[in-house]
Length: 329
Length: 288
Ligand SMILES: Nc1ncnc2c1ncn2[C@@H]1O[C@H](COP(=O)(O)OP(=O)(O)O)[C@@H](O)[C@H]1O
Ligand SMILES: [Mg+2]
Image (cartoon, rainbow over all chains, first blue to last red; front, top):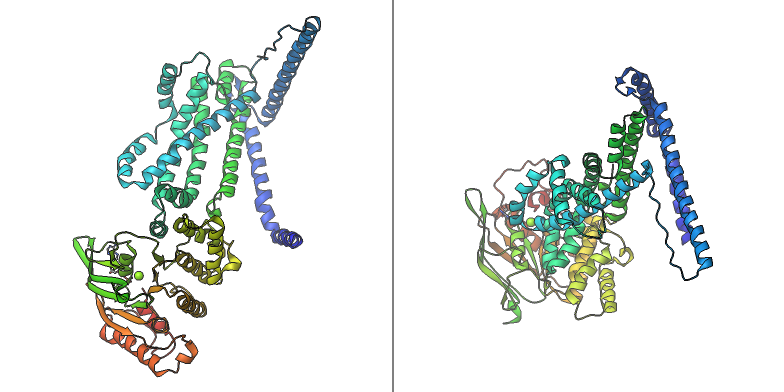
């Protein structure tokens, strides 16, 4: 049995391998490489001609060098942190040797925040904001989609708030968070909460709208089946409405995640919240000769992470959604 | 309540709200169906067959009159009036087994154990010869197989009445013949009451105890009712030469194409295919 599956799979692989023509290879690999090379060439030719107050625009070589420096900074900080911890452990061991009952502590290392740290901060924030938006938008979208009256009531609000930019939300969210999020020992920092809420507010709309549309477009036939079976409301939602609208919900979530990532960078820049946006802003303020190159590194990294997030969503959609045909790029 | 009044439609009228007033689709439909009877509804496209079926199913509420099942008025849909929809209406994300199981779990969640329910699902899939494809999803099944799963789902509810809206309409002739035979067998074994909409004259004669012929809309009603007194079990090949069978066919054809001839001119290329087995031109004009 498993043998036959294996040979079957192998036959399929061979089948696909045989299908890749030189033409396809050129299109899927050759042409992208040509495009990237041409871009790099144009960039390196054009950059020296653009003069700014911080010197000329960096070319690809400068950016490459700075990305190496940023990585080295990170490794150095890691090294220092490890040494700092090791030193404390050594000291504690010595204290315990003399007095086994002594209370020892290890203070965490608080060095400079590096580029890599900022990446992790941004990723954490965007995931939290996106999760919050999804948890809010999907159930609300299902409720609104199921009820025509509710839809008529909510639709104008959605239409008005959907196009609002994060820059407009940010001051309000900041003020509200600092007024309401008061605790002596907060689980999350205030800046984190502000970023997360802003990201959620701006990114929840595509998920909300797509969920509503998905619920609206559940086929009448399936609703009839549900009625004939007399499925209770929650079973109807769980077994018929939700699976029916899953492809649309995922499409919305993918759009939302893209928006969330864009909004986050803007919010971090504007509010000086930790993350890649703050890194860009700090470099801009810093104004050293390397700043432009470093900002460029950040721009490229931001782009790549956005791409990776989108691909990750696509993989999730492909594994979770029954309708594979909607999970395309 | 006698056995002959198992299901009763009494003075059913149905009007739909449309732009600029009301559209009277059905007017004064009366029909009594006995338990275990197989009744076909036949009529031209748009005359109101589906509307009748949906009223019995409870998916539509009649504007006037109503439907009684065992003396109780039908007010809402329910599993005792299972429906086989025209386009299978299977949940595309569930396998054949899971589609049937959804119905079985809902209907028998109190009266059967898990194990019993599982066996019951398999039993019904076997009944329509779909046991081998239980784990397949609708998009992996052919049209005929999907329709069979739809029938298995309806049968698994153990309905008092089985309602079928052109169940074999979209299938090729061979698959259709096969499913008709299965349906006859199942109906004989379970003795279920069936109302089936069809646009296929041969299908109606082959399967039915009575053929209910509907007049053209608007304000459609029952024109004629033809009892089909052919002995069962019926065999399609043997029937082809049977005079009674051909008489029934003739009666239905003359109702549809002489008495209730569609007035609107349809673009037709073929000359009459009269007498030939399920003539395609007939099906085209009567296609609901
Ligand atoms: N919801 C509706 N609103 C308006 N008219 C309808 C509606 N449903 C059916 N009709 C009309 O009622 C008539 C009968 O429809 P239907 O029962 O579907 O016909 P059949 O199944 O015999 O082809 C048709 O003329 C159709 O246009
Ligand atoms: Mg119809």
